[in-house]
Length: 162
Image (tube, rainbow, N blue to C red; front, side, top):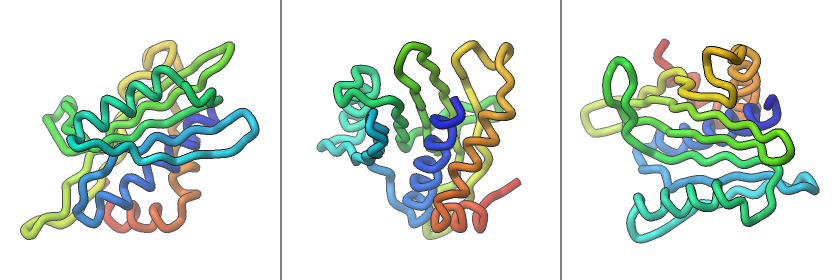
């Protein structure tokens, strides 16, 4: 679970970097193969909903035979405090003891009248349930992964609202 959380942090930071410039994120599917090779794919289609659906299908079917995978899509997400632009993240550890987590990182998009802002992640689910799993080490690994993407992390930190 630590490896997938770290990978999710890295890929999410990359997504933050992309949306910080005002663009809509093309869905990102990143995965690690059994030999350790990491692959990052931008899933494109004529419509972003179709691209997100294709990326979700690839994550669920794991046709690449990955050990772990992370999907990051630009979406509107409902939080307890309201609806927001966010990077929706789903991370999966495949194998004999599969594990997964769902989270979202809300942000305010850059527009002519607003500055880009990014907020901390909200964890929605982990395998075993949020009430039954200590999420602290998962969150620590997520942020370790985000920080390891130094260029993206610099953007995240510069625009982070706490």
